[in-house]
Image 1 (cartoon, rainbow over the protein chains, first blue to last red):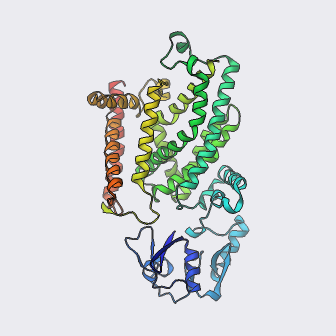
Image 2 (image 1 turned 180 degrees about the vertical axis):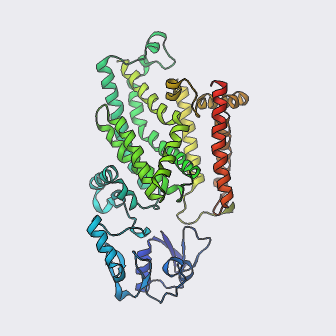
Image 3 (image 1 turned 90 degrees about the vertical axis):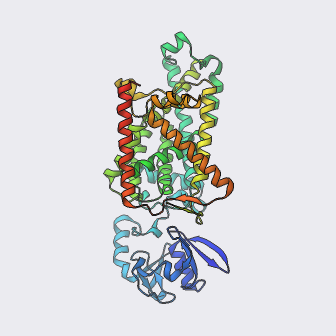
Length: 328
Length: 136
C-alpha cells in the first residue's frame, strides 16, 4: 500500500508501509502526522489512519514498528530488517519456513509485493530485469504474480508490454510472410480473382513497413482495451477484488512476457496465445486473490463475447501481412 | 456514486479512456480510409452462427454514417455500447477541460453490483439471441 504524508505543509511520498515505519522509528514523522492512502476519504493523523494490527484498535506506543509478516507492532529493539523490510522475532519460524521451502521471504502482506524484476530495472539493469521478468512469468507465474506490486502506476508495465509484444508481433508478421512466400499461398483465391478494395499490388511493402512501425501503437492501445474488457469480465464474475490498475499490470506482464515467444518461428504466435491465457489466469487469481476457476471464467468470457476482437483482429493483421508479401 | 476530486496517485480514468477512445477512433478511421480488410469472425466462419460480437464492425460503420436505426438492428448491444462510450467521452472531456470533480463509485451497495452483473449477462445473452434470430 502506498502512503503519502505531510511534512511542513508539503505532501511527501508515496512510501510503502515499511518505509513509513522507518520514518516513524526515526522520528521523521509521528503518530500525529497527517497521512493519506488509497481508500481514505481525507487526510488523517497516522494513529487514526493506520491503527495497530491493521485496524485492531491497539494503542501503538510511539516509535514501535510494524512487523511485515505478522502486521503487529514491536519496539525497534525486537525488529530486524530483511531485504529492507522489518520483521519481528515472533515471525521468525514463518520466515525460516518460507525461506527453506520457497527460497523467499513469506508473502501475504502488501509490503512484500515488490516485483516483478522489471519494477527494479534501475537496480538490476535493463536486460537482466527483462530476462528475469520473462522467466518468472513463463516458468513460475504463481510466485511472480504473488509478489507483483498491485499498485505503482501504469507506466512500467505498459513499457514492458509494448516493448516485448511489439518485437514479438513484428517477428510473427515476418515469419508468416516467409512461410507464405515459401508455400506460394499468399492470397486467398477470391482476392486473386476478383480484386479487393485493399490492393496488395500497390500497398504491399509500404503496408508491411507501416504495420511494423505502428505495431507499438497498436499494442499500446490494445493493452488498455483488452485489460479494460478483462476487468469488466472480472466484475461480471465477481472477481474484481482490486482496482483496474491491478488488472492492467497483470495483463501487461502476462501479455508482454508471453508475447516475446512469437520470436519462435512459425508456431510461436500460437504458443504465445495459449501461454498468455494460462499466465493471465494464474496472474489474475494471484493478484486479485480469487480462485483459479473464477479467474479462468473471467479470462474466457471476453474470448466468447469478443471473439471478433481477439481472434479476428489477429487474423486480419496476418491477412494484411500475407497479402502485402504477396505483391512481391 | 459520488463526485469528488482525484486522490494523490489515483488513476485518472477520464484522461486514460478518453485518450484510448480517441486513438481507437483515429485508427479505425485510417483503417477504413485505407480500405484495409475488415475483420472476419472466426466463430461465424467455422460454425455458421453469429458470435455475440458479430456485426460490431457493420454497426460502427452505420452509426458513423448516421444510420442509427440500421446500426441498432445489426447489433443492439454494440450500438448501446457505442452510445455509452460516446457519452463517457463527452463527460470525460468536460470534467478534464473544466477541471471538475470526478464521478466515482467508491462505496456501491452490494445489490447494485449484483444487479449490474445480472444485467450485463442478460444483455449479452439477449443480444446473442437477437443476432442468431436475425442471422447477422
